[in-house]
Amino acid sequence: MRKFLASLAMTLSVVGAAHAEFKGDAAAGREMAQSCAACHGAEGISAVGMFPNLAGQQASYLAKQIMDIRDGERMVAQMAGQVDNFSDQDAADVAAYYANMTPNLGQVDADPEVIARGKELYRAGDMAKGIPACAACHTPTGQGIGTAVYPALSGQKTDYTVSTLQAFAAGERANDPNAIMRSIASKMSDRDMQAVSQYVLGLH
Image (cartoon, rainbow, N blue to C red; front, side):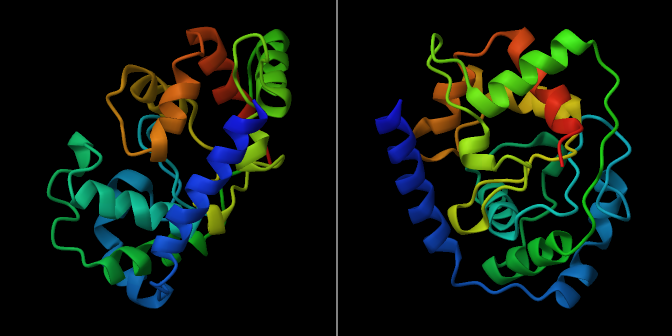
């Protein structure tokens, strides 16, 4: 497990360095992000469970996702054609715009046992299954780490979190360095995914 976490940190630190050269301009990003509001909300908080909240997301992570979608490294049907003409700088600008917005504070209404399992996985992982603690990469409060391109999870939509974990587990999403998230998600049961999604919704 220690070797796994060390590899995880080293891999995403390299990814972070690769995207650090583009300093985003939030004002420029505001103009480019107008069309994004239809799915992600005017304040970066979506009204639909399958669309992620972007407000408060780590800029380095969001910029990478935009570039990966543009370059075909990550397939998102709803994003088809949306960022095809974005330059790397455009991606950094839009990411900076959303990073500066106030993140969502989610309200959890789930069975206490579900929340307890989500908390266990997030804070301690599951050694028997080989699942590391989510907090090791996403921080105890779910803010993520920009320098390592670890995304913020705090307040994220439960439907989106579950669908993302399922996509990683099935190998349908494969833009995670060294298959890190694919390895983790493949060890999670549906119950585990649901539990974590509920826990991070109310995490801040």
